[in-house]
Amino acid sequence: MIKKSTAATENEKLIQQYFKHFNNHDWRKMADMYTETAEFKDPSLGKSIVKQSRQQVIDKYTALSQMFPDVKDKVLQTYNSGDNHIIVEFISTGTAPDNTKFELPICTIFTIENGKITKDFTYFDNFE
Image (cartoon, rainbow, N blue to C red; front, side, top):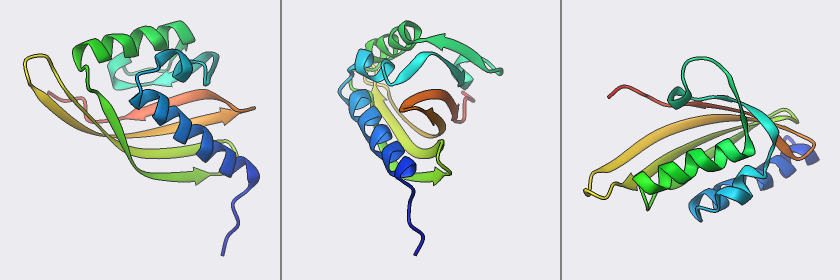
């Protein structure tokens, strides 16, 4: 049996807390889990890596929850990758005010340094 490092275990706890904040729509607490400026790769932000502040994270998810007031993420699996990375496979769901529903499989690679998320590289099918 392979023993997880302390860092890997702490990363799992951090990410569990992250998704708890997401599902509670506590965007400030979630944003505080990032470094002051973190790197993001996200189809909704374009094709390249962009740097975003905590406030930009709050603004992005506040807008998302206005479009989909019941947006939630269900974590399917987490995969530790060394002491600084954790990969999370999850499904995001929500309902728009017009009752349009979405269900989107997503995979995110988080880079964690000193207990803060420094990189959030998210992958999902962005085709309409």
